[in-house]
Structures are given as C-alpha cells and as structure tokens.
Image (cartoon, rainbow, N blue to C red; front, top):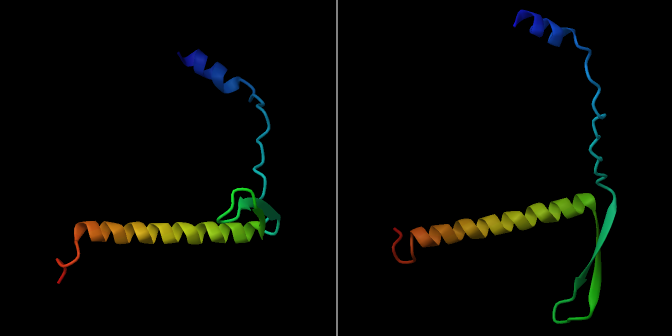
Length: 84
C-alpha cells in the first residue's frame, strides 16, 4: 500500500481543460423585448431597458409577489373577523 501512495504523489499534475470564465454582465447593455399590447393580439410594443433596469424590475416584481403571498397566508391563518 505504501509504494502505491508514493506513485500517486510522484505523478505529475494532469492539465485539464482551462476553466471557462463566466461572462461579465454589463449593467449598461440595453436589451429590448417585444410584448403584445394589452387588448390586442397582433399589436406589439418594444420595451427597452438597460440590464441594471431589467434586474431592478425583476426584483421589484418578485417583492410584490412575495408580499401578496404573505398577505394571503395571513388571511388563511386568520380569517376576517377573527383577529383582535
């Protein structure tokens, strides 16, 4: 067992593929999406924001959803008229 461990320690390090760098998100890059206008099936509007603005909108929308879910959970636990 001892000679095998020496062989493993003496083996040269193996070069694997180089690590892939994660692309850096540019907060100033502008991205546009086409969305169907409300009340129409064929009329689209183009909405453009920087990546930082899209990230902020996503966080704000998620916050609104979470608050609504918390309020619903409170209503399920304490139906109206049963609170102090």
